[in-house]
Each structure stands twice: as structure tokens, then as C-alpha cells.
Image (cartoon, rainbow, N blue to C red; front, side):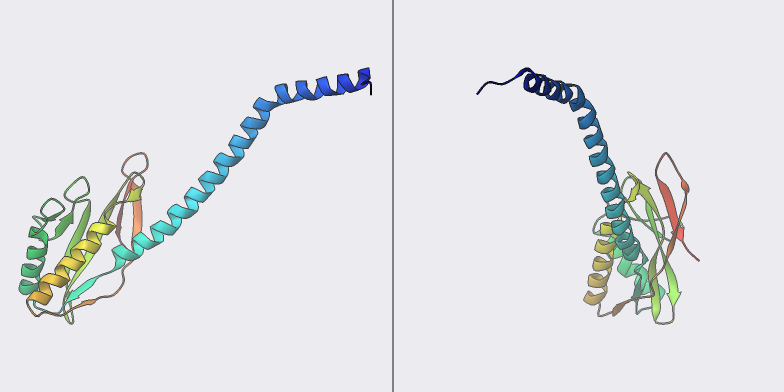
Length: 176
């Protein structure tokens, strides 16, 4: 069966269109994929941020006088001096890079003393110390239990994002 000239011409044009159009098609497809990836990343980050803010908003009430609570926290902090510190102002710090990336305060509570986050800093555009806060709460609860002191979860707190400290990182503060 003979193939005539118009078929050769159409096949040639199709091959030429593929050769010329492939870079444009590739660029368009990569742009669409990149945009979809960025949208998915923003959704994931927003979901994770809600979890982190919930974690930071969790407070701990130690059913003991302030001096006993300070001793209990001191034990928990001393167990991991690389991650936790006692600050000169009477508060406590959690280190990701600096000793005060996250600051905690002991405040009076009708049932005893409440341990709560006051501020935290972002690194790489996201708060990094939430796992340390969870660890410290567990350590405080364990040290209190060893003394026969009850620990319960306190009221949940909210935070506000402050101005940028650098290109993409900010310090969050307690919403009073």
C-alpha cells in the first residue's frame, strides 16, 4: 500500500511540532507541578502550625507551693542542661540554637503553680521547640510524681506572631 506525499508531510509536521513544542510543554508541566507542590506545602505547614500552637498552649499545673514547684522544675531542667536552662530572671529556657529560643514562666494558680510558655522563636520559618516542651512537661510530671505531687493540665493559652526577626523567622508571644 503506497503512502502518498500528504501523509509524509503530516508526519513531518507532527515530528517538528513535538521537537519544537517539547520544551514549552515541559516548562508548563513543571510550573503546574511546582505550583501544586507549593500549595500542598502551605496546607501541610498550616496544619502542622495548628498542632504546634496547641502544644505550646498546653500548660502544666503542679499542685504544690512555688518553692516545691521550682525544685521539681530544677530537677527536670538539670537532667538535660543542653536543652533546658534556668534563666537569670527566674524563668526557664528551651534551646534550639539559643538558650532562650522558648521561654517559660512559673505563675501562681489557684491549685498551686502553673508552668507555661511565654515566648518562642521560629527557625527555618517554623517553631522548632515543641518536642522539647513536650519532653520537659513529661520530665516535670515524672519528677513531681516521684515526690508524690499531683500534676494536671492547666488552661490552654494562645499566642500571637510578632514581627520578623530576619527574612522569615519571628518571635511569638503570649496573647494576654
